Length: 456
Image 1: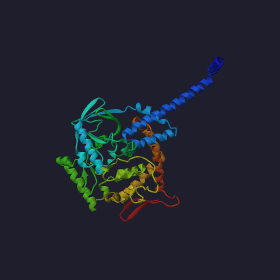
Image 2: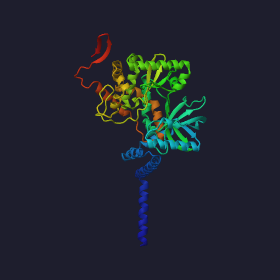
Image 3: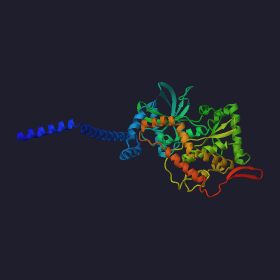
Image 4: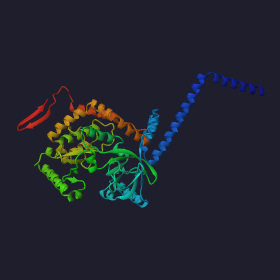
């Protein structure tokens, strides 16, 4: 028995020696073991990250992460490392416990009612905000309209107003929003497209936020509507407003206190009432070229939420004497059902779609039916629906896009940049503009007296 044990031991020794002699086999075994170890590490890393997402309420993203791993897509590891090197600004907010409790109460009220009211948003609370080592006195309040801003139990959207003469990143007021409410990078792309076509765009960024010492992850920092926005776009100070049946300006009481702005505001209100009464052409009040450009971009983004009147803002340019659109809130880029989709100049396909709802709006329908608007829209849609337009746009903004996506990776390394859908949306716009090449397509040129100019 002892002899057999010695023989078995010597046999194992010879096997080990033979294995050591065969360096190639040794390397193969090492690589196999390393591969198994890597898979195990990634598996437990994914589980750990999933537990974090579940804790923060982002269970939908957890499912997406598991699907990627199931497809053996481990690009999130590289993305996570990229995110850690992104240079994300750190924001620390300190707010008194009693004020935090009041904010939580207002949030619960809004969730129960299904909407955030103006009264709830008007309650502001003092706080200290530190960014890049500099501390600012600020006021904090709830923001948004829909409760999608409040659904996450661990963090929710809020607005910041900087006190005194200070600004943060050049802004006096800005939103700190849940990134998915702006489609992560989708709204950033929309803003850059607006700027590319010569229109006003908001300053936006991602920042890493802690509240009373507790990490909350990244927030989408979005500029609000005031003179700092206008100045940053190299424009003369002018009035910003919403178009309702009665024109609704920002900070109306302050505007009425100053003789200069009061006269301008009263003039703008008279102009709008003249438009509604049919005494002033729409093109003498709105910059219809820029309106058409903005509306065409919403078709490229394939989300008309930005055009609802409670979202759409205008800036009255004192140089041109015309109102220009300010657009945001395109939501997330995603695959859409072509049977429900229609561009601005098409008739809505189904009741209840965004396009159908816009068609029912008296003011927006007045814009859609305007012949000058249609002509400008066709011109713009032809430009932005060309693949080379997107190619050049993405190449021009490649460095900025890489930087902004890297910041997203800090919190969500499984993120997929959705630019593919922009190209798909271009194809649909082209098909709508030229549905059948065998037919003659006529475009409105201009109307003079009793003559109608049509381009074939």
